[in-house]
Image 1: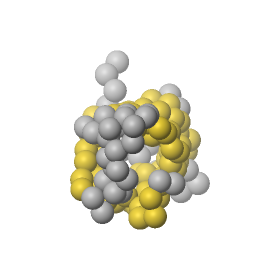
Image 2 (image 1 turned 45 degrees about the horizontal axis):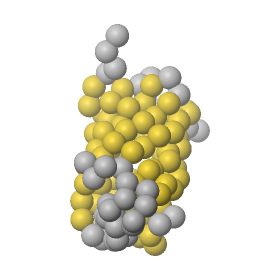
Image 3 (image 1 turned 30 degrees about the horizontal axis):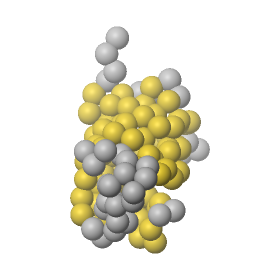
Image 4 (image 1 turned 90 degrees about the vertical axis):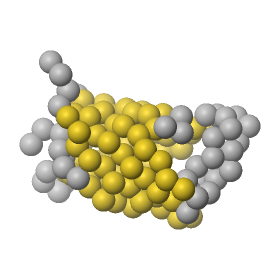
Length: 116
């Protein structure tokens, strides 16, 4: 099953919740969340059939607090995350980040195909 499409992302941490969108297409993965975070990276088929492995760089704009409890910073910064999700299906996962000891709880849901 090809993973290409648009996915909705709902996430929660010790300091709140957020939402965003993620697009996977032709080996690339990119997205945005309502807090202003940008996601850029890639994906490959996972060893687990029907899944993909994501590698994303999360870029946080200045003045943005994170759901993990990280307070707003005066400058833009980035960090990398990796996770595995089901292709074209709902996935509930914990995503560890290098900026906080507690992982983010995420619900990733397939929304639609990419138009031709």
